[in-house]
Structure formats: structure tokens, C-alpha cells
Amino acid sequence: MPIEPRRRDAIAAAIAAHNATDQEELLPPAAARLLLVMFPRSDVCQRSLDDLARAGFDRRGVSRLLRALVEAGFLSKDRRHGRRAPNVYRLHLPPQRQP
Image (cartoon, rainbow, N blue to C red; front, side):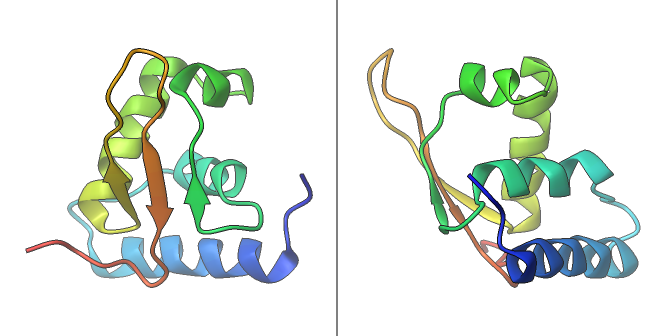
């Protein structure tokens, strides 16, 4: 699915702003690439780790990036139960840190 240029720019700007203000928890360039794969047009993603790995990411790396993006407030995660039900992630631009 093609990525909207405004979305690509907004994600890149949000990651850059985060890294400029939070020097202790820098997000790698792969974080922006993962967000673009997960959210090309919508603010909701329900894809499995295996599916994201097939999009060019290491499965363990995806897990670490997702955790870092949740901690930084870029994503919220709704856990689904059951072996085959992937979690639902919601994109937050600007990031929203949970208390």
C-alpha cells in the first residue's frame, strides 16, 4: 500500500523531534521505517510480528522497536487473546506518553 507523503513527513518529523528532546531514549531510523510499514494510511494496525518481519524486519528487532515506540508514546497497544489474533496498535502523532 502506498504511503501518503504527508504521513511519511509527519512520522519522520515526530521521530526527529523525539530524538532531539529525549537523548536518553533515542529511536533508531528503523523505528520510522516500521511506523511507515504499519501505518501507510490509517492510524490502526493489526499485523502479526511474522507479517512485519516479512516486510523486511528481524522478528526480534520488531519486538524491541514496538516496545520502544510504546514507551515513547508513539503507539498504544491493545492486546488480543488467542494464538492467531495479532495485537492492535494505534499510532499517536504527536506521541502521548502514558502516566
